[in-house]
Image (cartoon, rainbow, N blue to C red; front, top):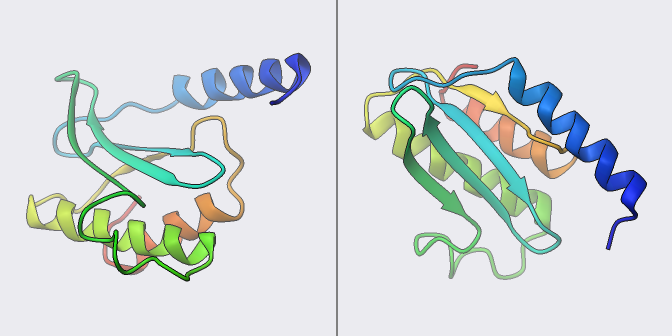
Length: 121
């Protein structure tokens, strides 16, 4: 478990990042959360206060295919899945919300996979 100092730093970072971005139905906020084992992504329309879609390493489409992949590669697969689902909904642009996490490692891999699959942010 993280120390109180680290939690305070993460909370401040999340508030700082979150204050600058806002998602709409046409351009949703792509919110990322990563735990030690999994990575989760939500497309959120803040103007409607609604989650448009979600995907994670626990998603049914990916569950059997992620077996022996490294965590960074799993994040890439989740990014491709999110991009595919959003494009099926007719959404071409998103706002990326890394939350309290640094743009590094799994978060960066997920963002780059979303970009490569055709979404813009």
